[in-house]
Image (cartoon, rainbow, N blue to C red; front, side, top):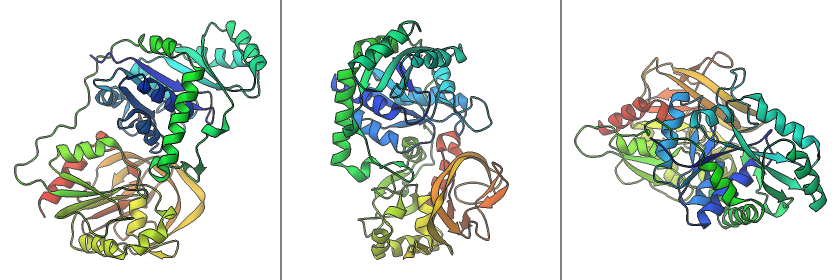
Amino acid sequence: MVSTPRLVIAAPASNSGKTTVATGLMAAFAARGLAVSPHKVGPDYIDPGYHSLATGRPGRNLDAYMCGPELVAPLFAHGAAGCDLAVVEGVMGLYDGASGQGELASTAQVAKLLKAPVVLVVDASSQSRSVAALVHGFASWDPEVRIGGVILNKVASDRHEALLRDALDESGLPVLGVLRRAPQVATPSRHLGLVPVAERQGDAVDAVRAMGERVRAGCDLDALMALARTAPALADEAWEPAYAPAEGPRPVVAVAGGAAFTFAYAEHTELLTAAGAEVVVFDPLRDEKLPAGTAGLVIGGGFPEMYAPELSANEPLRRAVTELALSGAPVAAECAGLLYLARELDGKPMCGVLDATARMSERLTLGYRQAVAVSDSPLAAAGTRLRGHEFHRTVLEPGAGPVPAWGMHQPERRVEGYVQRGVHASYLHTHWAASPEVVRRFVEHCRAR
C-alpha cells in the first residue's frame, strides 16, 4: 500500500504558472524539513531538473502514453517511497492529453490513477468574477477528478484579490494561495522551453529559492498539506528495476551528461545498473576520453545545437566516440545523440559516425509516436514495438539510413533513424521503464564485447 500524501498541480491552460507553483511548493515544503518527492506529468525533461534542485531528489516523469496507464501508480510509488509528501506538476491544461485520444496522458488521467487531489492554478491577470465560472467548469467537467482548491496567480492588487475571493466564495472551493505578479521569479526560455538547470547553475538555484519564498509567502502550506493527506492509499506495488543479470564482470556503459545532454529519465540509469552495467557519466563538452573500459555508449537528448562549436572543438572525444562506434560496440543515441553522431551540425564537424548532416530549423517537431523496430540492433530486436516522443527544432538529412531504426505509425507512416554496426540512433525519445527488455538486451550486448 502506498499512503504518501500527494498533490497534483494543474491549470486550465499552459503558461498559467504551474511550474512556478509546483517548484515553489516543493522548495517550501523541503525547507520545512520534509522529504518531498517531485514528479512531472508527460515527457518533459526540463521541469524535473528544477524539481530536483528544489527537493534534492531525482525528478521523475509520469507518462501514461509512453509507459501505459498501468505503470503510472507503480512508478509514482517507486519515486515517492519513504517521502513525507509528493508534488506532481501537470502538463498543459488539466484535461489536455495525447492528440485525438481522449484523456490519455492528461493531468486529469494521472490524478485519477493516483487518486490525488488537484490544486488548480489560475492565471487571474485579466479577470475577476469570471474566475468562478472558469473554476466551476473545470471542477464539474469530470466528477472523478477531485479539485481540492485554487491558487490564484498573477494577481494585481489587494482590490483584485478581494474581487477574486468574493467570486470564488460561491464556487465552494477554497483559495489556497494568492501570488502577485513577480517577473523577477521568471526563468528564461528558448526554442524548446525553459533553459535547463545544468546550463544556469547559480541562477537556477536563485530562481528556485525565489519560487519557494514566493509560494511560502502567498500560499497556505498547512492547508495544502492537509489536502495532500486526504489522498487515499494506493494498492499498487512500487515499480522496481530489479533483474538478475548474468554472472561475471559488469560492463562499463558510458552515459553522456553535462550541459549539452541533459535529457534523461532517472529510471534509465537504474535499469542499466539493475541489468548488470557499471554506469559512468561523462561530459562531451569537457572530457577528452571516454570512461576507462567503455563497452557501450548511451547518448540521450539535450541541446547540442547550443553547444555545437564546443562539441566540435573537443576532437579527442569525437575521435574516441567514432572509434568505439566503428568497432561495433553498442551505442544507443536519442535526438541530441543522433545529431552528435552525424557528420556535422550547423556546419560544425561532429563525430561522423552517420553519413548525415543536421541543422537548426524554424519548425518544431513535437508529439507522441508509435514505432516498431525495423531491424535487429543491440537495443531492440526487429519487430519490437515502443511508444515514444519527438521534441526538436532540428532537421537531419537524410532522416533515415540504409537500415532505419524505426517504422513510425503515428501521425504518419515513415521510417526514421539509423542502425549500423552496433549503433541505434533516432530522434525518438523512449521511456525504458515501459520496455525493460531493451535495456537488458543492450547490456548483454555490452557484456559480450
